[in-house]
Amino acid sequence: MQRARRIPLTIAALAFLPLAAQGAPNLDTLTTTQAAADLCAGKYSSETLVRTMLERANARADLNAFITLDESGALSAARAVDAARTVGDCKPLEGVPIVVKDNIEVAGLPTTAGTPALKDFVPQTDSPVVASLRDAGAIILGKTNMHELAFGISGYTTAFISGAEPGVRNAYDRSKIAGGSSSGNGAAIGARIVTAGLGTDTGGSVRIPCALNGCAALRPTVGRYSRQGIVPISRTRDTAGPMAVSMADVALLDRVLTGGDEIVAADPRSIRVGVATPKLANLDADTKAAFDQALARMKASGVTVIEVDMPGLMDLNGAIGFPLALYEAYDDMVTYLAGSGSGKSIHEVAQNISSPDVKETYDGLVIPRKLPGPDNTLVDAQPAYEAAMATSRPALQALYDDTFRQHALDALVFPTVPMVAIDSNPESSSVGNFLTHIQNTDPGSNAGLPGIQIPIALGASSGLPVGIELDGPADSDRKLISIGLALESMFERLPAPTR
Image (cartoon, rainbow, N blue to C red; front, side, top):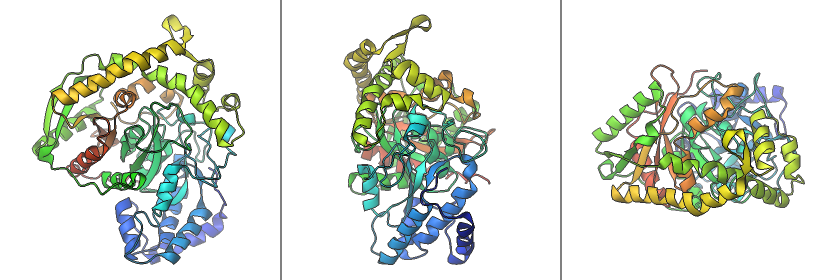
């Protein structure tokens, strides 16, 4: 783990000693919304909050959650905020520490995209999404680890390691995966190191880590947030996405990123959701039990829940996902690198990839622009890409539109991931595990829809987090968030993991 403008550990340790006397907040129960309110009311200083979070980040280095922990930069920013603060008159995130996935550009800090070739690339300007957070008063605590180049769902990366073993580790059980590709955000928020972060999502990359680590997330409608200054995979599918300990925090970050008005919780009796049977496949016992209990609570609170059929959903999705992501990855990365100032080419990036699964994907598919074909052959990706864009994707979007309209649905609800976190090892990055983990998150991504992830329970036998997702019609982000705020109140907040 890199530490920008590193503080000597002996000094840092001494600095942390007086925190209890300063009335440091309890990170196990703190939310972003509460932190912003506390700081504005003068209950504690931003410097105290930053020191508390840095202390926990260093204590949980075994999670591999950070690539760069900006200790001196965050403390300096906190002191400046404290010196300028007017109690009772504050910006929405004034003095609140936020973490940023390391494929999003932050001025003055490396943007590695989790890959060795970019380890020395330091942008001079913030990406627009980070600039919005800073304008709202947020402090960037550090850049978080991720599945290399965002090409995976396990977070098992060998490129950047701060603990004893490779891979970003689950906040509730470090022998398990944190999910990906926004792995470090999920682990850091789940471990209550921080209360919020900004990630990216192509096929599930903010929702899967939050499902496995017990946090909330929004994948917005594509185009809701700027994609400038973000290392890409797919221009059709990529988006930034807020991740936080609660839906109220996600709503706050969305308001900051869009400049919109405050969103209030929907009346549960006005909510109508559908359960599509294709998204109930492959559930483990803990996930099925938690999902069934969640549906029962929703119904008891007045939510209308109906079963719907979406014929051909998974077949349509299968014709879109890989062709879009693998074909667009080449052009989009070439364009990004040429304009980034990194001085790297796509071939230099590919040559230095550390994680075997990502190396195989880049060398075998992205660079030669191929797709897996029948009988273990490789075929030209362009025809499949063109067919996906011209035929399969419009058909998938029409299927969603018809389902929402015919049943008068506000959203579809389903388990975000079919299973709780699996063991963290090289096999966790297998193609089979990848396909199972994106089973439910990928279709909405390919259709360009917004989706929210809400933690609902710890598995009865595993003790690991389970989450539900709700996907809404395109551009229904505000309504979807209002539904999430209503549903979140039906479920108890997950307890912090033991340490």
